[in-house]
Every structure is written in structure tokens, then in C-alpha cells.
Picture 1: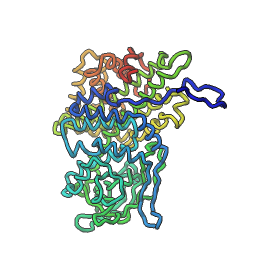
Picture 2: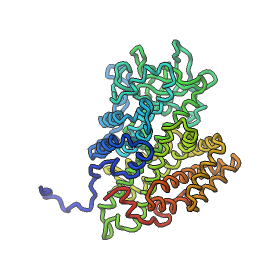
Picture 3: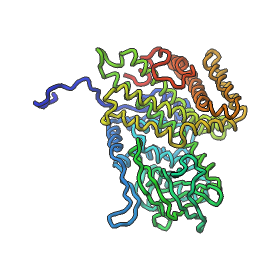
Picture 4: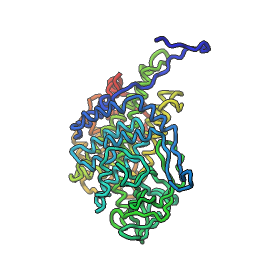
Length: 547
């Protein structure tokens, strides 16, 4: 049917790029698909293909945009004046959480462990995060809380709710719900990341319960069915499980003060909260709250890497799609040599982030293996530092591909750009991560040097790989003060070394060769497209997003 134009229309709109069509986020992502099969998730490939098709449908992209334009609203009281401390969300919030629960992202890797379970969950996360990132926050915290809670004698009360694949967002006592979510509240206004300065207190009540008094400056996913929080118990800090509803069927004394007005992650709510004699159960040993929650952070930090890799992938796809259909200076943008250089460089970064995230997820599948445990402990904070930082820069470049159209909120790029910094900040900002890398290396002993040297020896023809490994080994021999000054370089070199090793082993020659030539030159502040020329740019772009 011919398009009917208004008689008042004075010009014809052309050279504007349409939205992405329906696609399959699994089958259309070669690096993801190959990585899942390689790292142990092959048994679930058919299921991932099905979910990739559903998550790649254009209607979900529209719903995600709407959910992020309509911010959550705090409803502290009902119309009769009773305190309810509830948050109203856009209906899309419920739909995206329902999708995440149906995929098992909230806990299946722990509740039903199997070969490759964390790799499969990572693949789901990498696809879901391309569509709507805000709904990942409560999913991450729920999953990360399970291994901590599983050690408690009362975990059997929670397990059926955590195992359910049916999202239940109703505000009811847990006994009346089909499933549950768990959030966390650690930081306080006077301390931020310095958790030892927390002032919230816990005093014994009865039957193993404690009375909690204090505040939290960031209370993530405030309508979750329970939260893990940190409070002072005597001279030490302990971790506590604080339910929203008490077993008696009454509301707990957890009062939402206000919602945060955030830069991104706007579909999700974060709150300031006061504990007015709220009841909670201790998790872990008394006075060991910080080590308990540091363990939880190792799981949430993996999801920061996955979430950033997902954003980078979606930004890349959006940029390539736009460049293939937008004409400028007499040809399509994709045919301009400099644009191909930038896009190919972004494609390299995206694939390297994906293969690293999946390899790291495999390490979580094998905690019983000392080498995998050490890799997980050292590489998780390093990957969170580097991949999250690179994603912020990548989103800016992808937005620039769109030009002025990318800066407008009608298009997806502004939301992706605003979403990028949260993973770099949440669960420890860059310096915190790099200092944690140094701590992990200090506990690893000679194993870390053997691992670094082994990656270089595996590729004897790669002189730049050898030079990077030697630079890293030299830095690890420095004094503690000198190491702290170099901490960001150490974390960066470690990640680049692992990414290069993975790509040399598993990626096509044109991908690995381009990565080696453009990354292992010590250019930590590099700009996309400004390194050595990326050879075979068109082949790289076809691999990243087939035309």
C-alpha cells in the first residue's frame, strides 16, 4: 500500500535509519554462540536459541524504552494513611522480570547445578542485558545471595521460592507468594565503599532474630522480599537477612525514605532506607559480615562484566546497523574507510569482552579446581575494572556513529550510554577493583606468575604477548607502594593478556591478529580507531553482525 502523505507536508523524509528488525540474539552473535559451546554450555544451545529469538524481537526493545522513560514512583502510604513502603513500576518491569525468571537467571546455576550452568546463565545474561539492563539488578542480587543463604539451617524455608521460575511481584508475605527476590543494602551516607564506617546496629531479640536500627544510603531493588544488610553486632560487623514481611504476616520495620534520581538504570528503583527496629537473621559468623559480603560481591562482579559486555554488544550492533543504512558524503557510512576502522575496532573490543566473560563464567562452574578458583579470584575484579571502563568509552563511540540522532532520547543510544557507568561504579569502583586484584595476587603466590608466563609460552611467535607478560611479571616484583601506583596498569595488562590468549586459541586469525596488533602496545588510554590499521575490517564487521 502506498504511503499517504499529508497535503501540508513540505518535504519527504529519507536517509533516516529504521529500528533494528527482529533478530536472534544467540544465533546472530557468533562469538557468543561459539563461546557457549566451547566453555561447557552446549547442552542448552537449543534453549538459548529459542530465548535469543524471543529477546531479539522488536516489541521488547520498544517496551524497554518505555520502562526506562517511566521512572518508578515511591508510594510510602496507602490512601488510608497506612505505611506500605511500596514502589510503582512501569508494567514492562514485570514483563522483563518474568522473562528473566523463566530463563532461570535468578538462581538456577545454584539451585540446580549442572555442567556449564554458570556459562549458560552468562549467555542468558548477555542477551537479556542487550534489551533491558535495569531488570538485571534484582536478578543479580538474588542469584548472588543463594550460596550464602544455602549454608544457613533455615534455608529450606526459602529454597522453593528461590527455585521457582514464575516471577511474583505481589506485595505479600512470603508464604503467600510463588517466588521471591533478594536485594542488598550495604553502603551508608557517611562511608560509601568504606563499609567499616557503618553505624547501623543489631541487638539480639529472640529465637535467633536481631533488632536492626540505622540507615542505608543505597538500598537496591527496595521491594524485594528480603535484603542482605550489614550492621554492627558488638565490636564487629555482621551480615543479616532482613525480610520485607515477618513470619507473623506483618510488615517489617524497613521504611523507604526516597528513591534515588539516577543517571541510568532508570527502570529499576534504588532507595534510601531507615531500619526502625526491623527484625533480621544473621547470615554467616558473627563479626564476619564483610568477608561474607565480599564473597557475594565476587558473584555480583561477574554480572557487572556480563552486563557491560551486553551493553557493548548492543551498542556495536546498533552502530553497524546505522552505518549500513545511513548515507553521508556520497556513500553509506559503512563504506567510509575511517568509519570501518572505528567499527572494526569496536567489534574487536566486543568479541574480546564476550570471550573473557564466558571464560570467567566457566571458572565459576569449577570452584573445586584450584587453578579455576585462583583464576576466578584474580580475574573477576580485573575484568570488572577493564571491561566496564572500556564499555563507557565504547558507548560514546557508538553514539557518535549515529551523530546527532544518537544524542536524542527517541533513539536507543542515549539510554545505552547512560546505562554504561553503573557497572563500573556498582560493587566497587575502578580503584577498589585494582586494589582487590593486588590482594588476590598476593594470596596466589607463585601460581599467578606461572599462569602469566604460561600464556606467553603458549604463543612463542607473539613477541608483544611476551613483552606484556614480562612487563606484568616485573610489576609484580615491585614494592607494595609501587604496585599500588601501577595497579590500574597491572589489572589492564592481566585482562589483555587473557583476552589475547583466548582469541589466539579460539578466534579466526583475522580477529586475533587485529587484536594483538591494536591492543598489546601499552596504550591504556587509546581511542577506538586510532591504533594500528585494523586489517580485514569488512570480514570483522560481517562476523560481528552479518549484513
